[in-house]
Length: 115
Length: 109
Image 1 (cartoon, rainbow over the protein chains, first blue to last red):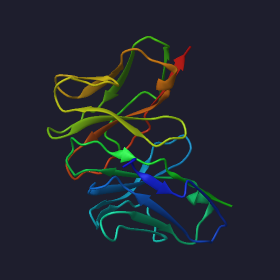
Image 2 (image 1 turned 120 degrees about the vertical axis):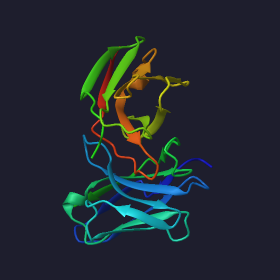
Image 3 (image 1 turned 180 degrees about the horizontal axis):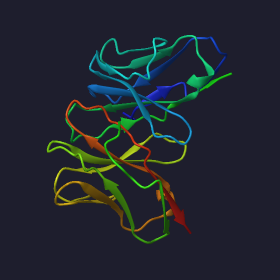
């Protein structure tokens, strides 16, 4: 297992199009997180899952955003009707459990550019 | 919102120790103190974490104040590869990981 994998690494899309990103966590990691990061800022929490259950969605996540983790393994983040303000790095992370003394592992991210 | 306060940036000379401070005055008894760092164009990576006692690992040391309202990440001998943004985070069970703005560490050759 080589860590958290995100696909694609880069995506350029026209405004108004839909995009979908995929995250493959480390095997047997129950918890999965999605973040968005813009230049010069720390990662902003979007949503997280415990197995297939979505625990919380940030108020940053508008109705155009949806995330799934159907079988408790990989996850997808979809953005509908993209806007230029959606341009950012989208990061995924996973951890083995919900225990606070465990570390989270991050992927390299998907960089989205909306033109 | 992030529950920690860190300086925006710090500078250090190569091969010297670096002490990165973090204030977390509202820490609860069950919060763990975690540190992550983010190298340019990469996702964050875990550095170290602790609860009450000081901790050491191959990357760094974590010194935790007796009242737990502050902590310090110590890089014993900084290299150019340690130039990154360092984030201090409080984690409690069931809590999502919330990042603040972190400290941008510059290493001078």
